[in-house]
Image (tube, rainbow, N blue to C red; front, top):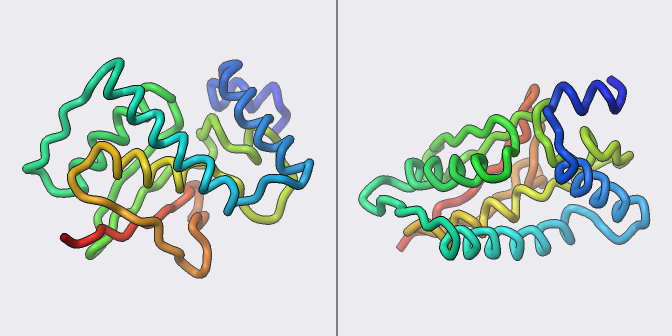
Amino acid sequence: MGFKESIEERALNANNVFIASFLAGLNEFGILNQAVMNIASRRAGKYLAMFIEAKNPIKVDESKDIKEQCEQVLAFLNSILSISDVNVEKEYDSIVVKIRNSKCRFCPKGVGEAELEGTICPFPGLVEEFINHLCSKKVKIMRVDNKILKKEDDWCVMKYEVETD
């Protein structure tokens, strides 16, 4: 698929192209990898949550379980960023967040055309901190097969351990 087709297929706007291609460019320069991305994106997640609290506060129902709280805050995040299709599942004592890869508007590979073997996805760290700032329980990204982001079919899958009280 060419870039023009990607713009149409993913319904990209200028902000999407800017962010994804900027991240791809940092990777090409050799100063960005997934570990660095996690640190930077956690900060972005915190500031996005603080922005929401200041600009358009959402009331998270703390009587709901963590899966429902995560669904609420991530649906809100998706409504303001238009990321992609985002699904939340509960698996034992963890939360699984899935983002549809072919529709993701921030993917450094799919949008920014980054050429790399691994990942430089902004969402594992961003989602972690966003949830931690807005939900009553805290989560921590888990490694699965020594990776924090796993591709399954057309989904980028991230798993978060729910911290116990």
